[in-house]
Amino acid sequence: MSMDKINGTIVKGIGGFYYVEAADTLYECKARGVFRKNKVTPFVGDHVTVSLEKDGTCTIEEILLRKNSLVRPPVANIDQLIIVVSICDPSPSTLIIDKTIAAAEDKGIEPVIVISKSDLKDCQWLIDIYQTTGIPLLTISSATGEGVEEVVKLLDGKISAFTGNSGVGKSSLLNRIDSRFHLQTGEISQKLGRGRHTTRQVEFLKLGENTYVADTPGFSSISVERYDLVKKENLQYCFREFEPYLNQCKFVSCSHTCEKGCAVLKAVEEGVISKSRHESYLAMYNEVKDLKEWNMK
Ligand SMILES: Nc1nc2c(ncn2[C@@H]2O[C@H](COP(=O)(O)OP(=O)(O)OP(=O)(O)O)[C@@H](O)[C@H]2O)c(=O)[nH]1
Ligand SMILES: [Zn+2]
Image (tube, rainbow, N blue to C red; front, side, top):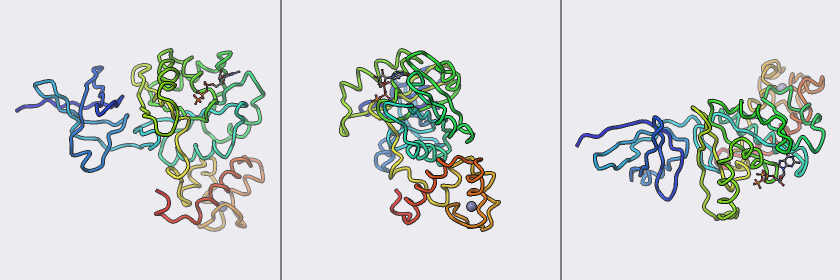
């Protein structure tokens, strides 16, 4: 029997069916049994090969190599992670922000910081910490609309996921960006509840040509603890503003925590690297330094 094969992207998964978008057509597919046997789960975002049979059956035959993946929520091939941080209600934790940034950097996902609720409080202190890092930074208010257009521009042509603690204003921002988010982030997620054991699905919402946003009802935040701990040796590369100094330290094996002749510590002292960022580095370094490889996954 001859079969046509196409390549596409999984944009949705519900009840054992996967919805694959290819050339503006949506195919309802089953996955080959072999995936389950090998304990491979197709993720939303996966680029896949689908066979189209004469009777209309579509089957996912192959999952192409993932650029990256996140476990909670399960999603693959994300270009950028939009980290929403409210300036108050709830107040920001720079350590949580930096852990999230590091998890993204470690996976090769571009982090973007969006400071929200700028109508409520002065954001300058937080801007000061991050504007020297080289990480894209925007300040927005979903109440006044400030900065929302800039967020829309940033999403163009990319696959993005939003993350941030409960209450920081993700839904409010997404609703301003596209009204179709309203239903998914509001009503359905409320029906499903937000408990740990409820069914939660990720779905890509298409905002434009090659522009998708992962709608992740029920997930306030990607998990950066446990699943996404960055190895000690890699941690220094997850703080991108450290990069110019890394090979200027006196010792090749410098951990940038306390050593004499450490170029990173010097940059912190001189105020070129923000103290807050380095404090997060220290805290994260101490968390992972004694962990063995098998404890990390
Ligand atoms: N003043 C002000 N309030 C905001 C803004 N954005 C969101 N809020 C309020 O903050 C609260 C939480 O906003 P949500 O958009 O539900 O936050 P969320 O991040 O989606 O929260 P979860 O759904 O729990 O993850 C709501 O009462 C919003 O009205 C803003 O820019 N300014
Ligand atoms: Zn050093």
